[in-house]
Image (cartoon, rainbow, N blue to C red):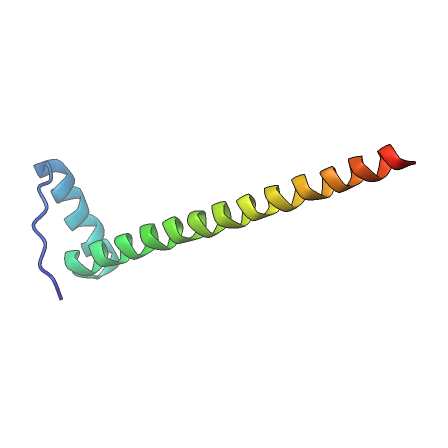
Length: 73
């Protein structure tokens, strides 16, 4: 496991500590949960972008085939 030093404004640190306390969890666990959520969101966006790019290529190919078929008719 890696230790990480983060510089935060005092007010933000105070609010995060209060949030952790209200949830009954240590501040360290709260930060860990927040980063897990952010990484999951990033991974989902990345997967969506890859699938959208594949779909765009397939749609373009389909439109090209349709255009080619209608020219012959």
